[in-house]
Length: 193
Image 1 (cartoon, rainbow, N blue to C red):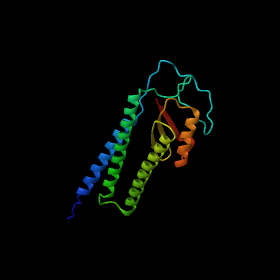
Image 2: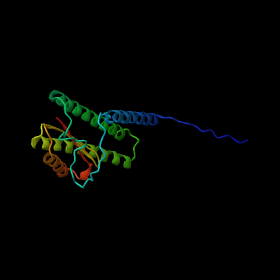
Image 3: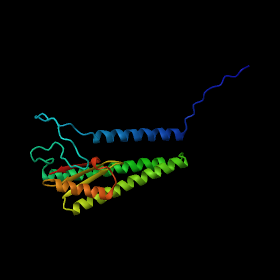
Image 4: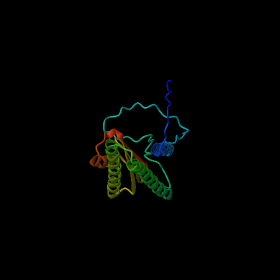
């Protein structure tokens, strides 16, 4: 008589832990996406067609009209913005490190996977250190407050000033390029008044 083979599905603790971590990571990515999605602002004026051509390394203010170079926010409100942005940034970085540590200490990773996780942790800590250094350099150069967000190939800088001119934008760009190697067109500067 032939015996029928049965397919046994064995779910152990490791598989449940990995599935749980995957769900947590997915939830963290989704929440990060929700909070980082830019909000569309409706304007009463139609945008004129852009006929200018951009040159490599050229600094242009986005949607600047007749000398308007930045976002106008009340002083106390801008201070609150920078405080909240710093808290959100720190929380996001802490969650990233926590997820990476849970994978690293999960117990069922191979040597190659552990090396990749360790490299990711070094990259995140390198970004944190470089962002902090750039923020401090910008404050030392006379900007009231500054925030820097770095990813692999982009840099976003938010500065608090009373009027950002082209020379200051070039100074910010120079400070960034002195600390990190990214293409100049991947630098975004946002002014908060």
